[in-house]
Length: 351
Image 1: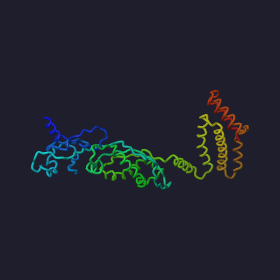
Image 2 (image 1 turned 60 degrees about the horizontal axis):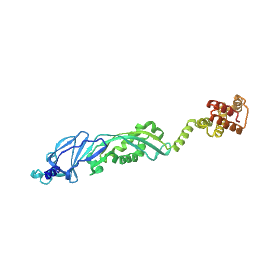
Image 3 (image 1 turned 180 degrees about the horizontal axis):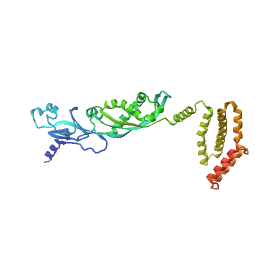
Image 4 (image 1 turned 30 degrees about the horizontal axis):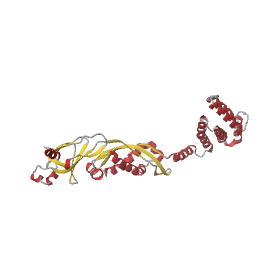
């Protein structure tokens, strides 16, 4: 009886695969000594493809459906030993199942900034990320090029290869899109379309069909972003120095205010705010001159006259007083509003 049980295990008569949803792309049907009985039933479900491999070579590819493995459904079997004599003997082969459903929400991104050429800025290093989806389009090609004879091949096994193809083609995609860097953020769909055009033939080389790819963000490294912000600011004010000073002052004031609100480095903040006030006065004079360039002195005098008379104190006294006020605020004796009011009064007295 034990001998009969052993023999039965060598003859497979039902071949099928139920996916477990774990991201498996290719799965080899387990067989005792890889022997399939003549007339065995092969079931291929929707979203699957089965590949029959005999003696290391792909014999046939089966689309969804139910098949009986005979010389009629698999012509290669006529060349196997004893099948031409219609003997009911098994044949040694492999059956691989491939999942053809869409693998969605696969992530891609630039772990390090990549360098591209831009018509506005020359060489630019940027970061980008997004997602994409794919499916197995040519199971035979995927088997021979990628999955091979492995028992299981998953999405995770392929992830690094596909990410590499995306990164390899980003530069060409940006160049072919003709979109300047400054316009990439507003034209991410166009960028994604250009990237897809570059990737489709690359994916097809390994039997993969690219279904969709998105670009969710394009950005510069932080240090380059600061330079770009300054360049944009200069572009906004052009060659008008008065407007540029106004822009710089507007950029600096929030930083000074953050330091004061934090209660730390109050003396440094006072000096910074004092410098901002002085810069604002110079800016006002420059703007007045710009409005009436033929009477610059009169405009400057009018700007000075418009300023209310205030008592002048030394910066050292102001800083000492602010430090004491800061201590009172920290101890809860002064409220934030009271501290801000006192600070504003003191700053008005700075030369």
